[in-house]
Image 1 (cartoon, rainbow, N blue to C red):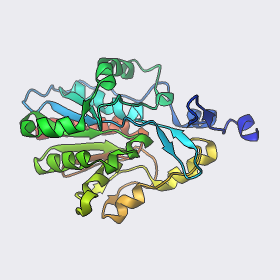
Image 2: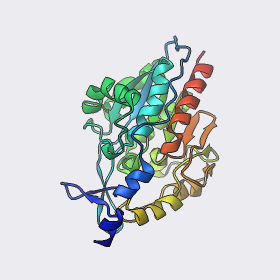
Image 3: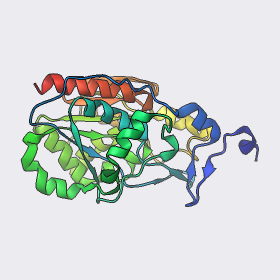
Length: 284
């Protein structure tokens, strides 16, 4: 009761999961983003496609058994997509089994016309995405038409995707064919898929930005999470040989070889700019 009065009690949803408290939403979400509507020179080459891998799962079970209502963070997904679209790239939307993309709609910036525009542009693809297995079977031979793989964040990116063998195949395919991999916040959890079947971590020795475990441990205090995370991410990546470039959930972005990463939702705009400018420069 006291938590409710203080506005730090997570909100119980109809399916029994919890979304962030009123205070957490006030502190951690916005109704309008910092998106910069930049006029890029449009990419005119053959490699105009970007595969975007989204989660199809909504609920993360915390250590205390409570479920967090999650999915992909809309700002982390749509701001980078806006920059890349404005630079002349197009997206193929995919989920592990072809089920609809799940967004953390409680974080949707409802007063941001740019974000609403690209969300509506790809809405049908979010509702009917491709299956990763079909992409592996049919698109690996069309590598010359792809520029990058994009994996947005949101805690939901840690559900199923790090353990998905097709994600691992796609990241190895991208790496082996000199495509870019773009991800942020909890999205780098997907990189763990390259260790499946006892394979060496593909990104050992890489510099990267990722959401810090230390911050995830603090957020239950304000009701962002309904309990502590079932497992961490940043320390796991560090243990595998990644060099973490941030200690806070800030706007840090990082480019190391063909890997482009960002630290948190606050890095979404900067990540989009870095990705768009890097792809335009490298794909001349």
